[in-house]
Length: 283
Image 1: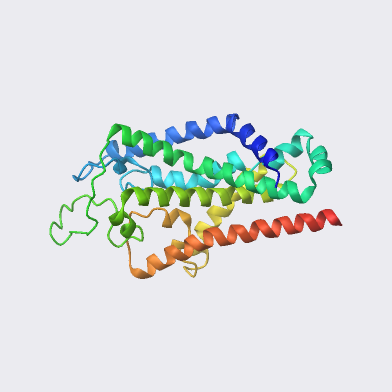
Image 2: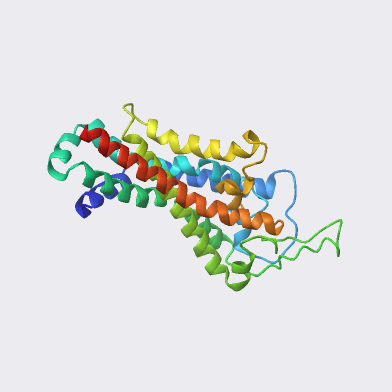
């Protein structure tokens, strides 16, 4: 890999309008999360104060989580998925090929695309965490044991259900849980961006690569309906990153399978695209 090229691609994208657009989208998502949680026709149930109540992925009350997870592939690709396409459309690709070689350019672009995609995907969550912590600087532990049997008509607020895959982390350390979730979103976003980078090897029109991870994510999310539930819902990042909800042990196990597939399948897809591109170039 070429560290100088990675640095150049990183700086160019961080200083681009795309990064600014992700910032704007981040604040829109935060607004949707807060408004729907506090003003969308119902009242938040009472519970111990914690800033995580207003944070996407953590709060069960706001609509920001679903919108964020739906847009995640596009946000990742927007910042990191066009590192190859920009070079090609700018006319610099021939110069780079002569100086670096196709294999080195592909490996370098995959690396920079992964880092940039991770930043683009995790940025809304990080901003949301900082803003929520500033507005409500409390981190109380809220018991996740469902007490419907005690108060069946008015159950207390539960941030993360005791049957959720994330609850053991939540019990051990809330900071550890936040770190794990941020890393998960970063890695998944990085692979979404790399799918866009790999797709750009085979596309000729501008911005097409930005849509491919989004379309792939939607299709993966729809597979349970298309296969009559032969593919579990829990395999989609849209489900296992909505981790505050619980379920039966089977569902938790399928969440873990989905996490593995979220890394394994994009890795295989990117490797295959790189191999095909190298062989196509050799011919």
